[in-house]
Image (tube, rainbow, N blue to C red):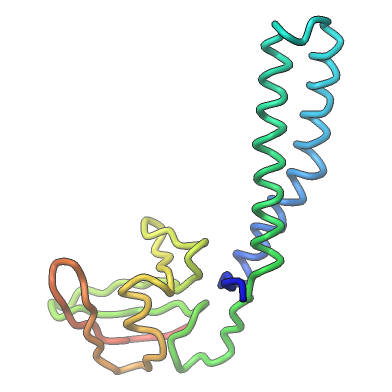
Length: 153
């Protein structure tokens, strides 16, 4: 069985939008560039043609990758607002009183700089299934620490 890719509804929409853009805008543009480069004559020494072929190969690879991801994904249905799940926005507090808010997402959507934490990360795995008020131990390369779930949205 193939591995399923976990996505939030927003993540699915972003990939779908990118795929549509590549197929309807970028692909026709590259085909036009190829035609123009071919019209220049000798293809063996035509750098414009080589560049357009490279761009086409990268484009087709990205289209195949997106189609695969969209075909093999599971969209997280975050219906339980009282338990941490993929799609939850979670506010946690540390022992020192500091608080952070994260969105738990599938690994493809993770962006720690934007507070989007993967469900497959040590932190994400530790807090999945938790409820408000629960204290959870999180294992990290620098040792374990505790967080408390303050809010789930």
